[in-house]
Amino acid sequence: MVFREGERFPGLQKDIPKGPPRDHRRGPHDRRRRYQLKGCCGLRRYRVLEGVRPCWGPSCSRPTRTPPTSGSSYPLPDRREVRSSRKEGGVPVVKVVSVLPGSPAERAGIVPGDGILEVEGHGIRDEIDLRFWASDDRFLLTLERDGRRFRVEVRRGPDEGLGIELEPIRPRTCRNRCIFCFVDQLPRGLRRSLYVKDEDYRLSFLYGNYITLTDLSDEDFERIFAQRLSPLYVSVHSTDPEVRSFMLGRKGIPDIRGQLKRLVEGGIRVHAQVVLCPGINDGGHLDGTLRDLARMHPGVASVAVVPVGLTEHRQGLYPLRPVGPEEAERTLEQIADWQGRFLRELGTRFAFASDEFYILAGKEFPAEEDYEGFPQLEDGVGMARRFLETFGRRSKELPGRVPPLSIALVTGTAFGPIMEKLARKVESRVEGLSLRPVVVENRLLGKSVTVSGLLSGGDILRALEESGPGDCVLLPPNCVNDDGLLLDDLRPEDLALRLGVPVRVGSYDLVGAITEAVLAKGS
Image (tube, rainbow, N blue to C red; front, side):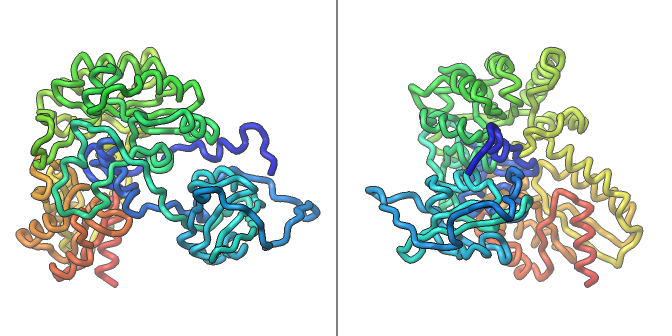
């Protein structure tokens, strides 16, 4: 297998698709999510642990290769026995979970349950290795099945994915004791996967999970550089070593400035996060953090500033207090001042406040162009503005009249007033349609948790039983994981059975979700 210089790396270097998230900062969520959780101490990683698996289907991005000509020599049959000695303690085996019908993998004879050992002689530890080494249109896989090893030749077109789904990565766990860790604030009795704290650069690259870098080894750095695992999402919180050590609950951790400099000098792009804890890393400390990070731009591409998320389950934890309206307003003014300076000096606003700051302060969300392409959307930065802009662009597609239909729009308390305004706009345009926002108070985690993505099935059910579900219920898209589960393991189907009406998971396109509900009612 021959690679030209720089050819393989761009196949891995990527931008994570920006669409509402998962995070650690506040609550459990997966890729689809995830407005409320994020990163190392937030929650963004949760849905990954709950079954978000890589799929090597047609949509998987990879470098475009020139397929071999028909006369190319490739001296290996489609399948043959391979002798290979297992290293002491075993060799890594990545299991195939499913195979897409008609895919290159199926044509090569790969079946679910097969273990992938090597690609062209290179050991495979996880799907990143597979993506890295299997980027040609023609390559050899060493597989293991029922204790027997053999090779298969895989051939695919230039735009064709491999067509396999692999078992999830077993994540590295976090050794920090962050004073604001959302996992430590979860009530007992939830599913076990929600209590896993990950600190894994592979999940940061694949899914945008925030990591602190505290346990990154030289070997990890070398792999990141060799495979161009960029961008990475890093929870910085403070560039002051003493403050950061206190916030992460660990002494003797590396200086984050040196670690970021090493990544940037190695060609890795970083998106940073600051979880703002009043009285600890705000005010002058935030100024210093933004100043230090800006010195590493454009390697450090952006910084998201988010308020600490606190539940009512903090017994025995460090006494933090939430960001109040006045503090939110001061922080917005502080960030706005820095944005003006960064625009002049760097040509970018660089630092962005999350939507919650604007909601807390009672301020209007910035214009769409002020978010500069939404680099931190998955951390709740600009999600509300994008939702509103999508609604504005698509509202003209609403029908003028529909058969009588009442839809209950489930939302958290933070977004309730906005959803109420949008519902009135839709009703004024569409005769026969009644939209009723149902604002759900979070009793599982506490009233201070106001985002829709952390609503439990029990709380949603209680609110709908009190207010009435109407003819149909639309749930926020970020309140269920990829397995269709809410925080308390209820499913939309369970709610529908209890309420006696259809319960659908909506989307971030309100017009599209409403249209689908109308069509489903008429079918």
